[in-house]
Structure formats: structure tokens, C-alpha cells
Amino acid sequence: MTSTSSTLRVILLAGVAFAAVASPALAQESDADRIARLEAALTEIQGQLADLKASSGAGIAQVRAAQQATTVSLANGRPTLATGDGQFTAAFRGVFQLDGAIHDQDDAGPLAADFRRGSFNDATENERTRDLSDGLNFRRVRLGIEGKAFGDFEYNFLYDFSGSGTEEGGKVSAAWVQYNGLGFAKIRIGAFPPPTSLEDAASNASSLFAERPAPAELVRGLAGGDGRTGLGLYAGGDRWTAAGVLTSNLVGTQTYDEQTGFVGRVSYAPFKRTDALIHVGANVNLVLSPAATGPGLPGGAASPIRLRERPELRVDGTRLVDTGNIDADGVTALGVEFGAQRKNLYLQAEYFDIAVERRSSALADPDFSGWYVQAGWTLTGEARRYNAAGGFDGPRAAKPFDLKAGTWGAWELAARYSVLDLDYREGDLPALGSVRGGEQSIFSLGLNWYVNNGVTLQAAWRNVSVDRTSPGGTAFGAGAATPALGTKVGQDLNIFAFRTQYAF
Image (cartoon, rainbow, N blue to C red; front, side):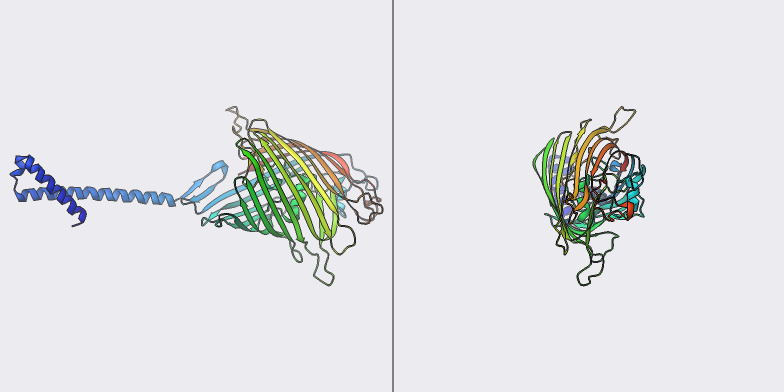
């Protein structure tokens, strides 16, 4: 008999003995009857204990099963799977952005009389620059999956089916794995966009305007950008972030001796309250070794660097400023960041200095620059969200659009002024050593409607001014394609743009 049963027997015997003293009837009961009655009571108690034990075991098993069960959720329209212990998760992500534009510019004339030009040695852009294409373009159509594995690992895969100006065959935007087990930092390897600037730290689905400022976008393309292969170290806290990433080519780009680059960024919020903050930061984007154009024969193959950018829109892919190819040993781009927020008001600014080191040349090394300042005011009171990467994501509608309920989502006014200067000694005549890439200035006003947490509509007006002169020769092509040295080849125009976006 178990110790529990023995203990119960002793207790029962003591109780009966006490009852016998107190009750004459029990005192007259025979020993055999007394023992039989005690055995029956003991059997009943043992049955109750067995039932209690079985019930408790079943409850514990149910709790354990619930803890290990896979859950399915659909928060903000994003399907997510997760194990009960949180060791494994899988969230499906997607975004589609349909952009439209109308370009208001002077009527086109023949090449010999209309001197507006785009990229060097590009006959197609010579035509398009004088009559930029109106219409629609899917800027992004992306589907992917992200999550955790074995607790300490994260993963992300994102595929893009869209293009920029012309539709492409699809490409990998991100494919990486990250280890979080160090505690103080995270290690990431694969293809991913490293954090090249303050603007790059914000999600492309919640930018103030449809495209990043031209200077930030140009710097992003040096050693960063979507689909950039690399190995990175990330760290951060409540007020600070730090990242260093060694990068190579973009996915799908094959060159002789792949480009080697480095992207580094630090940020800090010296003032941070519930409804206000100040952000400062610095970034460096390096091309340590440009990709070569051929095998490493004596003297080495050319390793060109080319800086050019669009007027902050991708419906037409024409670039209005362009340095052309510069045979280079490397590029150093240094940036400083500032951001501030007070409730539903937001301000952001950055400055970049871009220095190109020529390869095997007696010519001076050219230096370029760019900067921008932008601001947003949410009319409905919501604030932009300062994220863990040290960037400002878009607001979430406190009252999503519902015609029956009379709620209208979140509305935001936006303004930006950006300057990208790709000229170097452009006033020198003759043009030895000068770079006539042009200076592009853009003033933008926009209105953003965050219909709900998935749907966003944007409308914007841009005034684009390009000040640029021709280097002569055959820079844009033979004959009439290249205006004479010093001829103005820039232009002023207005662009009316809109975007329809769904993201989850």
C-alpha cells in the first residue's frame, strides 16, 4: 500500500476512535465492522484522488499542447504563422505601387535646334528628354516571406516583379539570414539593402514622397540598394543605432572582379519624449574597389564609376543629370543627418559630399555634392513613427476610412527641396578635367492619404530645374546629337504625379 494510503488509514482510524469515544453506537461496533467501514471509506477517497490526478494531468497536457500549437493571425492584413513557443514564425509580405505621371514641358524640336539632353551617349534618352513619357508604371510589385527560425535566427526573402520605367523580368530584392544570439549585435548575410542614409532607414512603403530625394537615391546606389549582396553587423538601443556592412555586386549583376564596397551608419536621438524627438546621424558609403570592365591585363582594365539620377520619379526612366563614366579607383560619400518631430509635425534633412578618386590619371579628382530638406504635417493629428532603424515611417490612421462611420483616415501635407550637383569645374574652358554632369534642383509639394493601414494614395507636384552645359565633342552622340561646348542642355519642367499603394 502506498504511503498516501497508509497516512489516510491512520487518519481515518484516529477519526473513528475519536468518534467512538463521542458516540456510544460506534463504541459498541465490532472490530470487523469498523475495519470494513474504514476500508470502504478509504477506497472512495482513493477513487476521488485518482479522478483528481487524471483531471490535472489532462489539464497540463492541454496547456502544453496549446503552448506548442501553431497559431495563424491576420494583423493589418498580413498572414502570419507562429509556433506557440515563438521559436518559429513566418509572415507573408507584399506591396504593389502603381505610379502615374504627366510631364509639363516645352514642346519638342529637332536635335539640331532643341538642345535638351539626358545621359551621355544614349540616343534613346536624347529623344525622351525632349518629350518625357506620360503614363502609368508599376514601381514595385513585391511578394515575400520573413520570420524567425530556432529562436535566434531571422530570415527574409522578397521578390520584385516590377520595373522602373520599363517592365523587367523580375529580380530578388532581398534574400538573407540573420543571427541574433549575440545579444549586443546582429549578424546578417545575403542580399539586402544596407542603411545608407536617414531616408533609406524608412520603409519604401511609407516615404514622404513616392521616391527618395535625388541625392539620397544616388548615394544609395553606390554600395547599397535593393538586392545588394553583403555581410553586415547591426546594433542598436532605444536611442541609437550602428551598422557596418561589407558589400559586393547587386544580385544578377556579373562583372570582372566584383565591386567591393562598405556602408556604415550611426544615429542617435539626444532628445526623445513621447510626443517629440531630435535625431542626428552620420553615414559613409564607400566604393573600395570598382568592378572592372575586363580581365586584369598589365595596366589593368578600366573600372568606371558613373553618377546619374532621375528627377525623383520612375514613370519615365530618363536621367537628366549624368557625369558619364569616370575611370576610378574608388568613391567616398560622406553624409550627415538631422531629423526632428513634434507631435504631428516632422522635419528631415541630409547633406552628402561625394568624392571620386581617378585611376592612373594626372587630372584632378572630381568632387560632387547633394542635399535636401523635407517636412510633413499630418492634418488629422497622427505622428510619423520613429522606427528601430533610426528612420521615420509613415503615420497610421487612427480612424481608418469608413464612409458609413464618417471617418476619413489620415491626411498629410508634404514639402521637399533637393539639390544634386554633378558639376566639377564646369566653367573651365577648355574642358580638360571638368565634369559637366549638371545641377538638378527639385521643389515638391504633396498630399498623402493613408486610407487605412494597407491602402495609401499620394499626389504630388514637382518643379524640376536642370542647369547643365554640353562638354562638346561626341558626348551625346555624333553630329547634331552633341551641341557645341558650353551649350545649355538642361531644362525646366513640371511633373504631376500620383501613386496608388497597397502594402501588408
